[in-house]
Image (tube, rainbow, N blue to C red; front, side, top):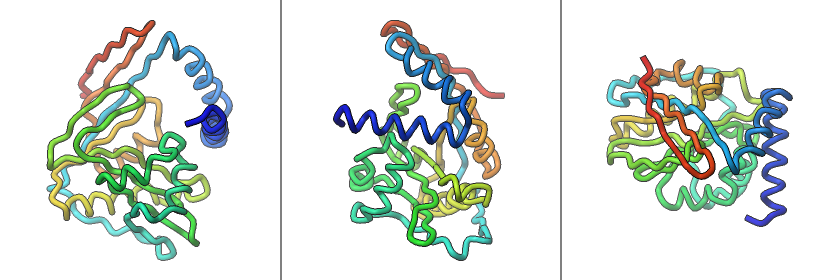
Amino acid sequence: MGTFALRDVWIRKIWRNFEDQGLSVVIHKIIAFVLSPVYEKRIYRLYNINLRAFSPQHSSGFEEIEFRLLSPSDTEAIREIEHMSEWLHRTLSDRIEKGAICLAATENGRVAGFNLISFGDVFMPLIHLNRRFRRDEAWSEQIAVSKDSRKRGLGAALRYRVFEELHKRGYSKLYGGALVDNTPSLKLARRVGFREFVDIQYTRVLGQSKWIYMRVS
């Protein structure tokens, strides 16, 4: 990614955080970014759900929304998702090509939300950690709903449809994670049945990284 493209990604990210969470959160994230070459500290919470015990949920009120799994040829939807989640810039089509699944919710031809699921070897960029999942396990890379489509239960509807799709494919567990201060993400996870089980504290000082695992009671 070139310098100007990277700058544009960060401008969009800062503006989106300002719209979603306000000025104080943006200032905190800018300070963390400025310090990141020499110091980082984050606490990331992992959660999972037993898909074998999952009972299909049928959300109402989404008659005008189409839920579908994307293919690499869905270029317009992929472009919208990459604009919505900057870290996926120019990578989503390749991820789907290599086996990831991306469930998109579209309304009036526009992407209202999505859930990206990966398998096998995954990388958790917020804590710079690699993990390999078993053949019957999956990892939720990202779930997002556009600002004008929130507070309608669309995030939960995406989750339930992903649970059903993975269950049909024979997967037994779905894992996911969020920073402990990402209250909306953790609230959604609890609402749809995820169980929180561990916090990973990642610290890096002058190139020296450390991970501490703390069980969630």
